[in-house]
Amino acid sequence: MTEARLTLGRWGEQQAARYLRRRLYRIVASNYRCRYGEIDLIVQRGKTLAFVEVKTRKGRGYGAPQEAVTPRKQQQIIATANHYLTTEQPSMQTLRFDVIAVDVDGDKTQIDHIVNAFEAC
Image 1: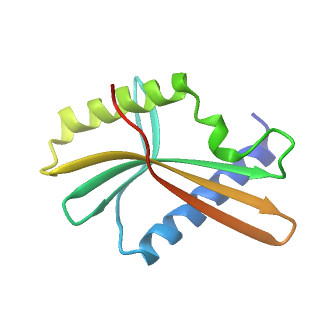
Image 2: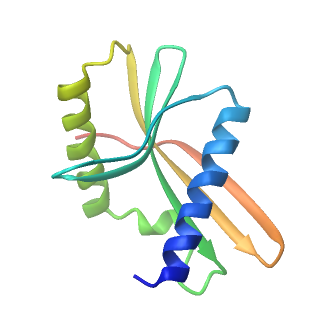
C-alpha cells in the first residue's frame, strides 16, 4: 500500500472518530489488532458496543467506499471482534458491526454511517 493511501486511510479514521464523538459515542479502542485482523474503531454508546470498519475513498473510480467491505473482510472483522470480546469481556447488552464510508471529492467530505451494516453469522 502506498504512503498516500495509508495517509488517506488514517485521515478517514480520524474523521470517523470525530463524527462518532459528536454523536456521543465513546472511543473504546482504535486500530485494535490481533492475529485475526484489525478493527478500525470500537465504540460504545449506552449499552451498545459497535465494531466499526472505516473506508475512505477519493472519487468513485473504484466504487463506493462501503463496497470494499466484502464478505471476506466481514468474516475477518467478526473473528477479530470475537477475539476482543473473549480477551476484554466487556459487559454490553448489544453488539453490532457498523461501516463508516468517508467519501472525499475535492474539498468536500461526505460521511455515511451504516449502522448494523452486517451481522455475525
